Amino acid sequence: MKYSRQRDLILKTLQENAIHPTAEAVYSILKKIEPTISLATVYRNLNLLADNGIITRINGLDGFMRFDHNTHNHYHFICSKCNKVYDVDYEIAPDLAIKLTNKTGFIVESCQISFKGICKDCKKLTQN
Ligand SMILES: [Zn+2]
Ligand SMILES: [Zn+2]
Image 1 (tube, rainbow, N blue to C red):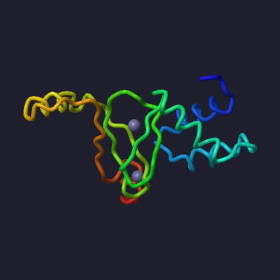
Image 2 (image 1 turned 135 degrees about the horizontal axis):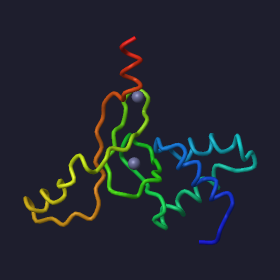
Image 3 (image 1 turned 90 degrees about the vertical axis):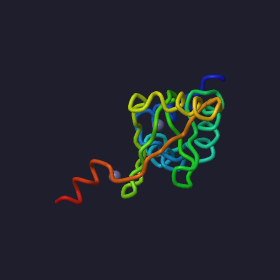
Image 4 (image 1 turned 180 degrees about the vertical axis):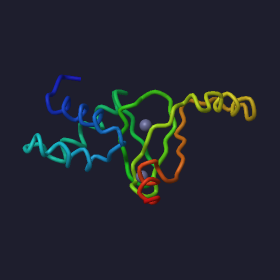
């Protein structure tokens, strides 16, 4: 991949907004600091970064394609109030894939596990 300043900006934006944004969300953050950038450019570069294994695409959390700067094994928690997607440490259940293999004989290559509920911030709001 050839270096591109805009792609670098897109990656930085994703890293600084670790809420698993959609391409549209990345675009709306970016256009404040880079007014000339287009949504098509954001899309193209996010997909390129994902194709190169630098970031991960997440599908099927809430019907939107989201992007994740974290390429390590981890689980997700999606808040049904604010729709933010949080990372959940893989260490809470590191043996899940092993258990699955033991039980079924299937070989796990990757997993996308997500929990749904109310995040800490939203829980605070409802308590007040
Ligand atoms: Zn929330
Ligand atoms: Zn994640």
